Length: 73
Image (cartoon, rainbow, N blue to C red; front, top):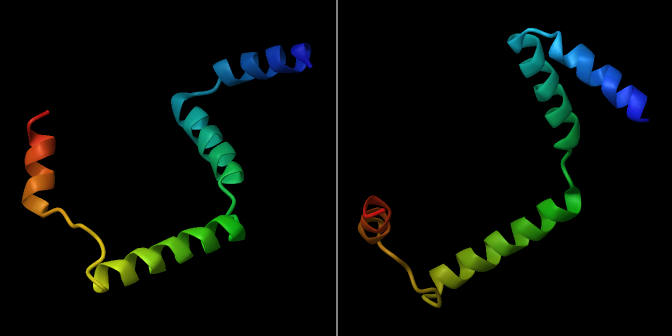
């Protein structure tokens, strides 16, 4: 395995920057597969938060407060 890694590293070093970016993009695309269970959990969380907001059960923060906090950094 170490030999394969060294061979790959050598080949990658010989690539142009554009080719390296395409390789990274390809690898990330393969890793970023949708997970239906995670999607379901987030959708449920979003529905729960929306219902709580509509029912007045969520404390909200104004846009101005959020932006002033981040501008101060």
